Length: 83
Image 1 (cartoon, rainbow, N blue to C red):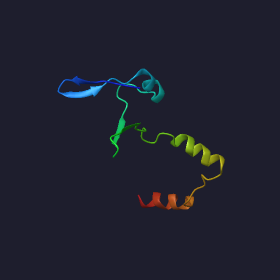
Image 2 (spheres, helix red, strand yellow):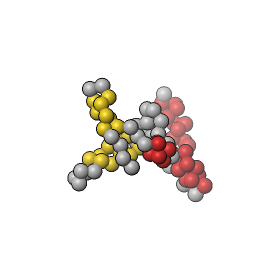
Image 3 (cartoon, one colour):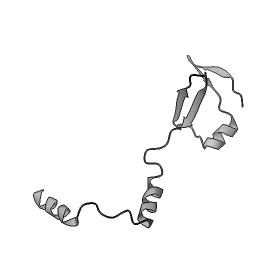
């Protein structure tokens, strides 16, 4: 895949090919991480959204029985009396 660097105002940029847009499910405003490698390569990654995938992880923990309370309920009741 190839792209040409173009002027965008006083900056430079390039158009993202349609295959990349579809492959990464990119939309206007999508955050991208860029890393420059020592061998003159540029690595682009779609930045994950905050807490992306947490719902699936918590559902998995619940199925595995890993969602038990770590603190007993009476601590919550005691804390309420202190407030």
